[in-house]
Image (cartoon, rainbow, N blue to C red; front, side):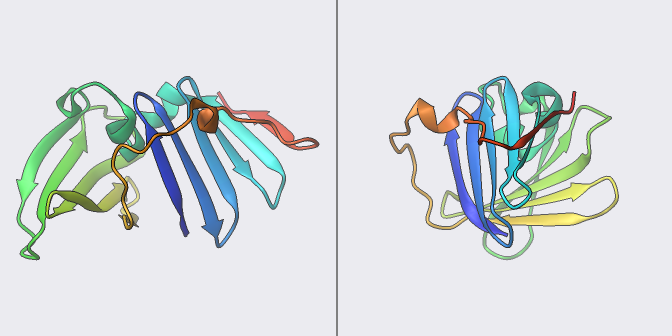
Length: 151
């Protein structure tokens, strides 16, 4: 998948996926909304419940990362600085994260779930501290969409 990720700390983010399927994910500080544009369907849940032990919690929270994860340095031999994070919460979908920095910039994030599936996020064209409008992080329900609460 490809798309754009916006982050406004604390606790607000937005992912606009472009391919293969258009989707937007909006976290407004209390709820997360996932809009599948092809299905014209929105699901929404408690943000705290969904984020525990995930990379989004790591990026969006103001709390120290050590509050949520056990950290260790890793040497992958590729010239990047790697950190491994294991969630302190036992009942999360994610069992391990590995984050790579290249020249001090976020480069890769590897996420392993409890089924052994590995998801890789590759970050490109990073812009630090852009001016973002809070309105970007307010979900607007599309007319005629199915609207499903899942908590």
